[in-house]
Image (cartoon, rainbow, N blue to C red; front, top):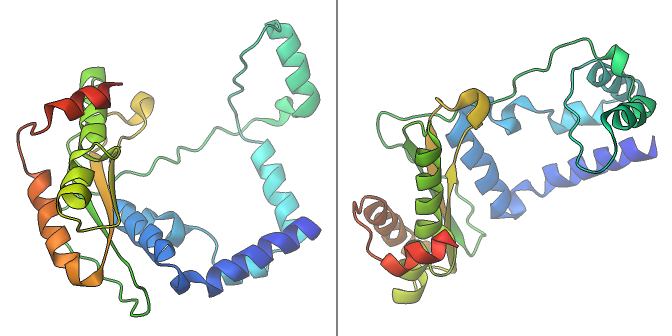
Length: 232
């Protein structure tokens, strides 16, 4: 009961402080852009639902979880038999009769640009993200190339995004980007994507957005040294 109370208290605090931190709004909005109605923030429990949970509800959910198939990954010197025995002492493996549920969420693609705007007048910093849907990266070469380009473009202080935004133009507080790749084993054919995140002043927001779009559409490598750094 004490642990459940803490969960409810945390949910209450998160609900009340949501608009007091623009990072919260950014996180929720980006998840909606990436996954639409499959967003974790739309499919998860609301504060009202968390508040109504009982210890019986939690125990029932735990029992359902124990009935699911699971993968046990071990790295060490014990034999398979010893690992099986240790795991069997902790988990009721014979009860695991239900197949695992595929929880993969497919990233959305868009036929035309869409802008999501959330007004927080009291915030001193404006957060801007751009999501660029990309074709599926199916082969190892395609995935590795996207990861390399992702680090080159937005992976650190030597990246194109940081250098152009922060070092050369002083247009932002920070700038970064990262690739979005689906599970390779089961969903390699799903769309990939790239996301940027930039924190700036409100009066520079449109300039930052325009420059981000421009940089994302540069078809050539403009900082060869950055590629070498990204390879490390």
